[in-house]
Image 1: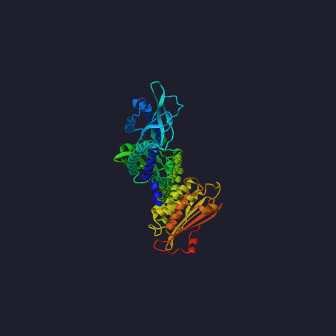
Image 2: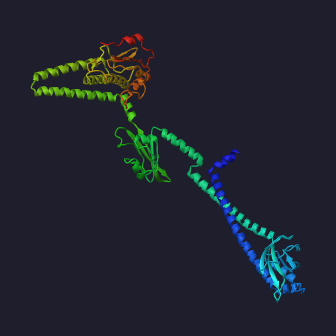
Image 3: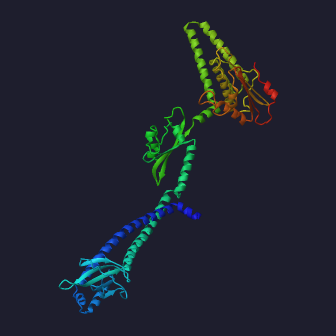
Length: 548
């Protein structure tokens, strides 16, 4: 009976069943109440009719003459006419005071018994119930008197129960016919309504549509993209968890609320009125995050009935892109150079204002010499301009942080490396050096603050070594320091070392960390040539980079 259980679930079956149930209940209530009222009315009319006919018979001269012993046989014919012409009557008889049948007529073939009038009745015409062989159970009796007022007998008319049953059956049949017509019309209308609703639901059954909506709601809530939809009256019809978080909206049921009441800065209603889609629209209301929105109208039958916005948080992507391309490190280097340059200019300006011209000249020559030696030492060993610029910037940054920054004299890096692209090299060096600078934040002022970098590219591959004398890395932190998002420096960090490991793995390299809490940390990275797979011998890797 699987097909029957499936049928009960369909929209068509549910509507037809509901319509039939409502019609049946309505017909039963209407038929019961109407049948009761109809039977009561019919009984009353039948009783009045029988009383009238009995009274007229009792006043007929032929009936009176028959009871006085006149032997008038025309009474039998009169009674037959009464029974035949009056539809509600089945029996008409004349009875003497002793209860003997004098004359009678019936719709049946013969009279087997007559209800005996009650002699104690004082009314000239009265109703009486009883049971006879012929089945006459209800009758009207009218007393027949002579001219002196003496009782001569009774004129009795009545009905059989079959007439009552026939009347009830006729009434019930009428209601059954009405019910059949109503069921046909109701079933037809229910099927049409079910077809219309199903078309509006794109052919889905209500149960399937509900399950689909629940599944899609769970999927939409699991998306990283935010989704916000409004109807044509600018009320929110859907808002997923990602959109609520991106837009920093309060937790609560936003469905059915006006758009500008929940999100006052929104311009989604502009798409609702224009009917034109908008793509990659930055949200100016979001200051600390970079969110782009795609906005599209919801069109039905050529009419715009709503709008939907899809939000994409590009904050983390922009941060990763900046780390990948080394933009942050270059910008930081330029900022440090600018800051250092301004400080030097202030010193020179002060000496000139004090008219210490020789001291100013000596200061400029010394700066030029130191700068030239530092820059020359870097550019002489690092032939890739972008990487050299990064190290020069980090040198200025180190001076600003009061950290001694050195490039190992044995370093050499050619232009056009066979091991790493320039942007990947910048990301590796920049993140490792910046991580070394951060290690001095919790170091005492009088402690040694040194960072040494060694970059060597040989036939066996590329070796990068960054060593600092900072606070070191605790063992628990060392176990998780390469995880994405893990950081001991607060929110928004935890991408640098994860990016370093990702680049090393992408180019088939290896990374080794040696750290002692309170003494410092050394990061050693080996990247093989991309056209070769042989790893650098371990002895070369360990001894190639030493402190000068």
